[in-house]
Amino acid sequence: QVQLVESGGGLVQPGGSLRLSCAASGRMIFSFYTMNWYRQAPEEQRELVAGIGGASSTNYADSAKGRFTISRDNAKNSVYLQMNSLKPEDTAVYYCNARMGSLNYWGQGTQVTVSS
Image 1 (tube, rainbow, N blue to C red):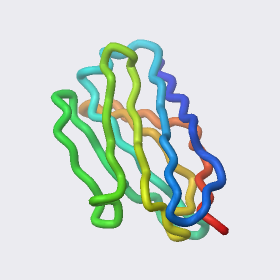
Image 2 (cartoon, one colour):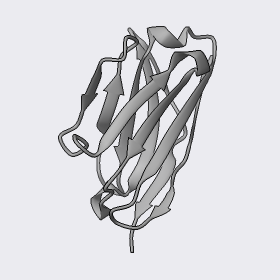
Image 3 (cartoon, rainbow, N blue to C red):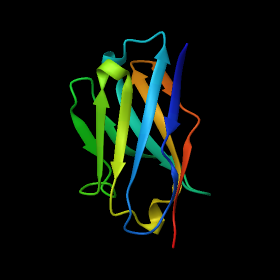
Image 4 (cartoon, rainbow, N blue to C red):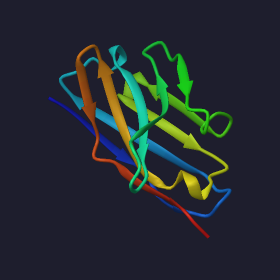
């Protein structure tokens, strides 16, 4: 079993920054997994924000490019999302996701609210 625990969410003013963390544990070789951050706003579908492969190749949603940075520390079984220049439309629950082949795990989510 694999557990993913997100942290770092909260309330921030527009233009501010947050750093989300996701710690993975359990029966997994962390470096083998592609790690992703998704988000889901109220009444919206869950969407991919950013992903990072085991060799640290990255991909971003257009909405995240230039503002968000995903990174990972395989020694700590952790993935991070640095979010800068936050906008009200970034408000959502952010979920950590680990994927390898047919294996797909989710964290419980962390709320990010961008509001003045």
